[in-house]
Amino acid sequence: MLPVFAGDDRIRRLFTLVPGSDFDVDALAAIERVHARTIPWDEACRRSFDLILAASPKGDLGLLRGDRVLLPHGAGFNKTIRGEGSGDSASGLDPAYVLPGGRPVSTLYALAHPSQVARLAAVSPSAARQSAVVGDPTLERLLASRSHRDQYRAALGTGGRELIVLTSTWGPESLLARRPALPAELAVRLPHDRYQLALIVHPNERSRTGVLDLAERLAPALDAGLVLAGPYEEWAAVLVAADAVVTDHGSTALYAAALDRTVIAAYDGGDELIPGSPMAELLAHSVRLERSDRPESSLEAAIETALDAHRPGVTRAFADAAFAERGHALERLREEVYGLLGLDPLADPATARVLPPPAPSARVPAAFAVRVHIGGAEVRVERYPAHSDAPAHHLAAEHGTASERHAQSAGLLYRRAERSTASPQRSIASPHREVRTAAGWTAGILDSYPGCRTAAVVLSPSLCVLRTRSGALLTVRVSPCRETDRIVEADPAAVLSAVHAWLGARPGQSVAATADAITCRTGQWRFPVRLSPATPDEAELTL
Image (cartoon, rainbow, N blue to C red; front, side, top):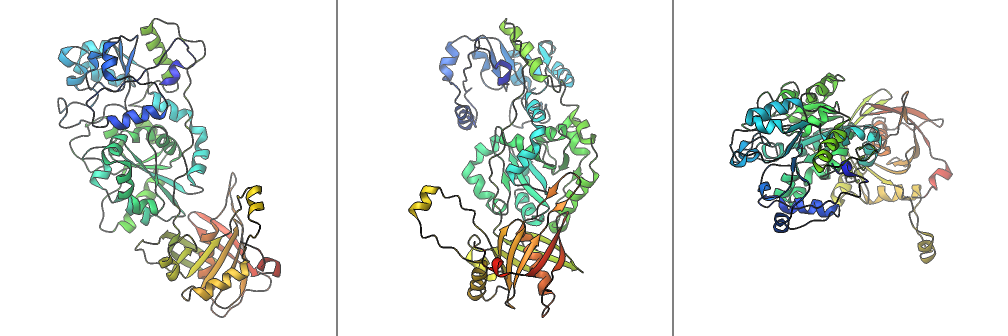
């Protein structure tokens, strides 16, 4: 909500942390991360303020002197937190916190939807009279960032794949608590060239588990390419980039619905989700990702079904019950808070700030178990992380990146040509640069790895040089897949797996002197591929 006060030199912002939270260390770190000015709680209680903004009614807010505004926190009031407050009230509307001692804790309750006013009135008519529907500032940032979707997907390395985002709230009924193996199952069961997987974890769960421990628990999925979205801003950019969301009962999915993304339910039920709430209605009308004894077939099938069944506007309709004032939330909030301050707002409108692109964090697997299906001149390739137990035609490994164990077992070994990033000064200081030719490197690999049947060099997205056990050195030229509005380039390593399988199915047959043409199908894309004997110049290309 900082843009509400942007440009106003009459406003000074101070932050303090209400004591008593189990997650206070990470909350303080988040404030310090943006270099905000903080003051100790004891000092805050001794001072008076013109306005106090709080995202939660919990804690001793009554000790702070000044008008208090309770801001929207999450997408509505969809669940209860057992063991806290009244126990059966919606979190955020619990009278134990909203009405401590029978008196409203806030001067103004800023709410996101008119239905929330009615729910607050059921708890306290007097508190409802002090409420205003302003919309949701978080949603405003998401909506303002929609045009940056391609940029976010590029930063994530999504390419032409479908981005599937898992979202986990916190507590005993969260996705990570109930189905901790699901991220790894999806990471190894979904074809790498068709799907990318990301995970959004509630900050409380990050704080409770610890970033290191969380990363270690997720290590198999991270090694398989899972993107672990950062908190605070990055999660929202990942949500904008997503094609579909697999969710528990956490409110992140309502933001996804407001963006009209496909929502897939992975909530197993419990006591926390409030019947009839917007989140409950969204989950009830979403495709379910059921538990199965055969996840290799059911997981992908459920995601395919949900993506195919998605119709524009249908999912977004469920978010209408949680969000009002879309596109106007910051202006509405500014009217309210400046009224409490007794100030005229600035003439320039308050505008939501575009989310920064996510930091690249995905690990591309260095070895793949590859399934192939050859139908005439078309080779369909599905690649899975090497530790998948899926039946495979061959193992493909990137030499110098994959483990030696995988390199020794690989039927296809390949290397990507280095793109020099050395500065001119470094080049002068190290004049004796050693390079390998495509012909020399491929021959050496076949000599060094008896189990390898094909060695290849990726020279560019459209050019590879390959050698088989027959000794033939071949050039592989890859054309992009063209659609009316975009061009999709293949991962050459996937194409090399198609060529490796196609050549292996034609023992004793040489590539025609003119050129052989095949099609590599991977994911939903088809890439034209031409094979020909390598020319002397192509054989001498360096890595």
